Image 1 (cartoon, each protein chain N blue to C red):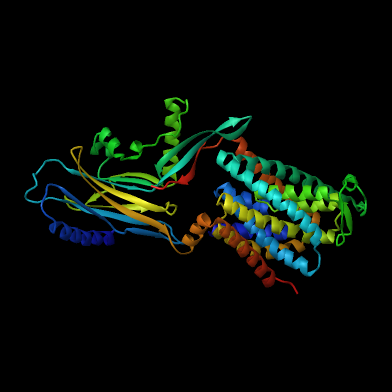
Image 2: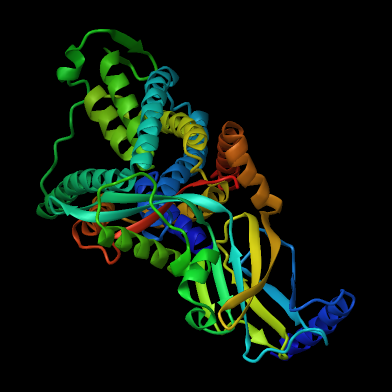
Length: 261
Length: 296
């Protein structure tokens, strides 16, 4: 905790230096992330990304009552997923019904300084696609199912993702170090997908969005992991042949090591 | 990682103990520990290549392989395995792969486990009562030897129809690639009882056929569904190789029919575990499958 505090102080100094060099406006939002790249090596067990920033005010800024709210979202590259539901058929539990969703984020985390419903009215959050309930998750293709059915699949999908640590909503996770200085730690799990992530910081006041800043974060496999992953998808035949050669070699070695004379 | 290494070691121990390839135990173990069935099946085919390779070399040195017979079996085996990989991909896209894997395991392990259990219990009670068992007479002919298209296999001293050989080879290649099993535990009895291949040659020959068929299955799985995990396979191989040495040592100190009884119970247990998953209401009826990563 002490280490985090001292880190915050250093960052605060950094941000202040950054802000003071900018021309004067109304509320300006300055935000940065602790790393622009996350490398997944074979011993990757997860990482933390620190998102910090400053709400810039100066003498020209009209002083307004009420408190500021910060919402930070981290969104992974989109993917297509299918949610299956098992039903009992002849006494066996079998995948029967499914819904396919296109363009859902492979990772999603929303951090806020107060519960989302206190930050802003639902329609604004929906428009900004902020929060798990406001993610645009709609099944592909028209199927004649009722609303409850759609809702059940959607809830199940969100539940699975939260359980896997891929989706998260953390209220009060954005800390204010001073009335204008904020920071939040976004944990990235070990099973994080790779690709380009978008980190968006929103500034709200009294339910109104004042400002929004976007950064990109790249998550990539590195070393042996990167090699095997890209080979598996780009050169699958070579990958398969390599797997066989590796297996033959291991078997041959074992035969030599444990050979009984 | 260490858990998987341990599983490789445990299955290696069992395979050394019972003299089996262990694919039909390793694949279920991986599935039950949470690795997707598709990845488990495809990766175990790679592991089987490694475990059969050292066996093949040992039998080759002893000149205990009928290469002509193995060649016929593995040609059929590769065709069967290509069919299996194709079906694997189709089932995966339909969302029914897990079901077919589970159902097949219940059927196969249930049947084979029950047969083995019956046989070993009989053998134990025979030994207790002291009765002398009459060995099966070699050279005895059955319906298989009446089939046409006969081919001569000098090493095995056989003159049999090619039809059952193609049948055995292709069905084991097919099952191997769909279920992630080498199929030695089905092939050896089939070669001995159906074709009357001499016992001294049967294991080396079937291992060679398994090696080539599973190598083909690995490459095809890698191309077709990208489900082979080299890191997982390597962990399993190393664990398996070490475990097998200890297993073989322990196995030498045990009676054959007792070993078979234990193996039968193990096979039945795994089969029942699959059946349990199919019949009992799952805690979570929903499952999420990622289909493709979309380019933004």
